[in-house]
Image (cartoon, rainbow, N blue to C red; front, side):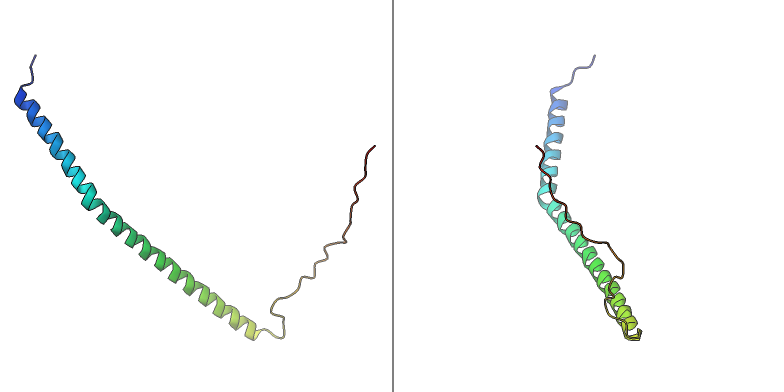
Length: 96
């Protein structure tokens, strides 16, 4: 059975402390930089989606305007001709 020497224990302890401080350094200085880069990327994607939506909506609106101009005397908002039925007012009956 091997017994760990004091030197091996000290070396392991130093390695653990170095890894701890390296991780702490990375989290303090590199993590905010990483988050900043990711936020910029998300912002660019959002702006691209907004621009695509605006262009799509604009082209649809232009097509709609073109169709409205070429229509022959139709109303802009046609009314529904569907008959819904008559209104019935129910009264509550008191039970004795």
